[in-house]
Image 1 (cartoon, rainbow, N blue to C red):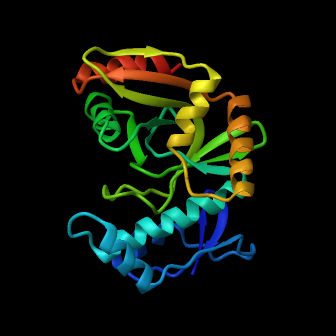
Image 2 (cartoon, one colour):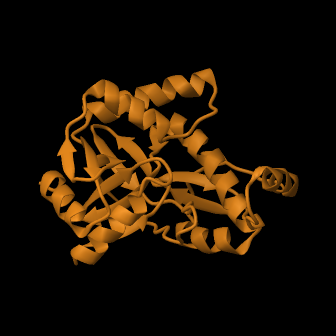
Length: 233
């Protein structure tokens, strides 16, 4: 089956219901050639399950494995995963990125609760595509466990790196810190050639008009108001 994800024609065959469900909105029936082919086997799923903690379902593992393959492959197509919870506000996309457990999804849900003009388009694995001098944030079928995996895209306005703290504040990182944080929140275990393409993508993203922030925040509603005031221009 062919899918168009981040404007990249991708071919794969999901075996389990949740990835088939999440992939359905991305089905592509046009004539463009396949740019990325993905495959996951039962043995890969079984071997991965042995390394995971808890009773993770085969469907969740399949989603995870396909997302890993896809997010490595897109690097050579001027695109990159940014592990984040992505919202659309005022026709622009804002990505809130952090390591698992810091509270990126909690923060974007504060936005949903506090503001009526936003929605989440992907809660874990949106992809950013560099299109000339513009960056586009794109939904993917790969969502983690939230079930939010919409086929939507919008110009990327800002990437916000979250840090947990007692008080809410926003600061501007320098380019070195941005690259470090991007590196830890994108695809890993890549070849030397792919790593070079990834660094090139980082450079192009820094040259775009995307803004970068570091948000130190707690889990109170005030955090959403402080971040929106700072980042939505």
